[in-house]
Image (cartoon, rainbow, N blue to C red; front, side):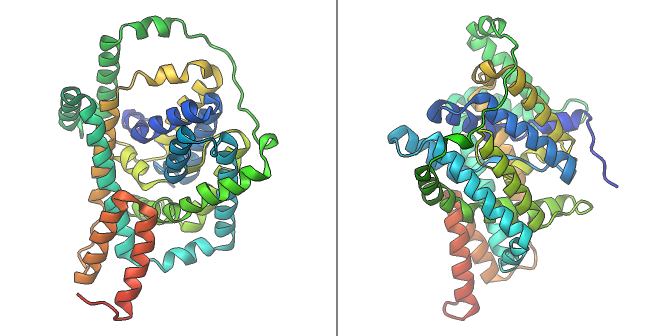
Length: 377
């Protein structure tokens, strides 16, 4: 029976998803006025849960479509509020819980051709790498040094690359911003409990949240956070397989819980697993480690969360994203594909770099056209 480990490689791999996590958390806090403690409390609880339940480096990530729409629209209009995001999380949670409990999640996944799944994985990997390069270019010399050093230590079990990268990043942050030291000295410990959000929700919140946030997220979740993560998990950890129904139920319960306690909508993205694995994680111990850290910060350092995140320079997050993307893209291979399969895989991948949900729908449509002989190569 598989058991979780807590060795230095699990500790290193625990931080493999920070490149995605930190930017979204900061955006929710600064643009939508989310309670920092509540966000990290929910994240911590569910990281621990999935580590104990799946016993693989199963990630807990922000839902990207909802997060991107919510934070960009909140900066431009007053239509999207924290209430609409909570409502979107609740609607999304109920949908996936229903699909998991009824078994429809697995039935939906079975109609998805394998080239579509691998195309999404490849596209996501490249998108992560491009996002990483963009962040590295924020300070290219720092990013270049960090990337070169990380590659040198990448498979070193004695000196895990991630831990060296984080120490290097923290040293640079403190060197460039000495005032951070004074700010850290002023940090005080106090108990913070999550806020209960349901009492704030209105009918308008549910209408706006369902139509403008939850609906665009559904195809993205099905493609990336259900089909692709199942493919990635079962390829890497065949001794600890998961099913679409289990993932759907986990996603459903997680989002109902998150929306109740002022957290952001969450999912299980394949890119997050790639990040954990790339930096050494092989069990759920990595999730339990990062979950415990986030939970402790949420409960006792809630007033200092944004300050604590300043210890991670943007180029360092870029290196994490770049290598996580490379790990994910490497998994998109199948020697048995013919010319049509390869066309679907590559074209879905290209569109996935822009929008996974649209790529997913495109793949279904084009695969159907090929199967009916409407188009040929």
